[in-house]
Image (cartoon, rainbow, N blue to C red):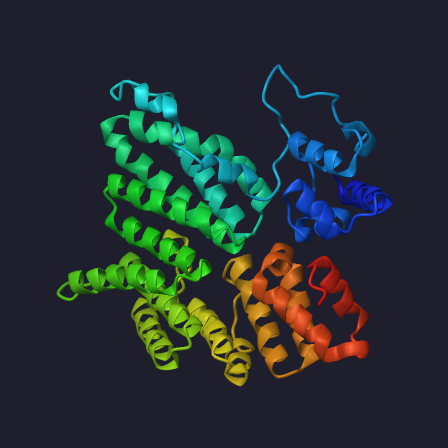
Length: 412
């Protein structure tokens, strides 16, 4: 669907819904979706390309699929799999809803499977590109066939290549866990992180295990299980620090150690424990100093710049808006991923909102939206901030703020 087609389709959905006398909330509940998802469909932001989702929506509106969308097939195709792209991470959730490749369990493990690890490596690199860019619909479509393929490769590749295949599988599940966290799908993030840990163990790359534990701690934070988040991050970090106490740590190890310190800083900030959050930020800065450069080991993007981005987020969590603004406005994030740059702008918007500076907050949020619309439209903190700004501004709210609230489904 082009953007114009999405808007036309959304307007048709809205018209049919209103004709039935349903609110967005009522229709969304009837079809098992969220009001936010339906709002984005009606505004032409969220595409509906899968036939099963289209049929579900048509049933909820009391019309045929063809009446809702004239180019839709009259019935499910029977001569092959559907080619439509899934919405968000729907297909990715299906991938982790059971064993990825049950038939692999019945194969002779000594029988090599047709695979090219070089091609898989390129696909996994693309997975992380999409994850960092918050392109979740395309990510989900890619992972559907890719995960079973890597699962098979990890079990059937020649012994000399099997460790690498398991490592690629771990990093794929790590990306999936990261994406699920950003979409608020914490239960799925937990499953994906756990599978990443197991695959990393099979790969023989110990640091991949610890990077996967970092993803697990993020899932626990999203679930608001702060005790589990702290336990997983602390036990991993303690093991790493004991191991490297008598040995020089490689840059890759420093990246993982630093990321775990940042995870603990966020956990303590969410718990309202200011001293411990500050202490973990101090330790993260020390590790970044030892590293001496911005790196992207295990797609953690750890380094001096990312530490300061996280410092902005921690300051916002602790209510220290002035500090967040002072640190954040001086950062050069041009070398980091789009997601990291957008996250900084979003957190600056939150900081300005804490200081009741509506114009500055709106400007930061719009800048974040320009970089990554999905981040602003789906992130709980961003949407809460938009609602807060609307309440602060009241009748004087600028049109740009109202339009942003509509795009993010963030009206009070």
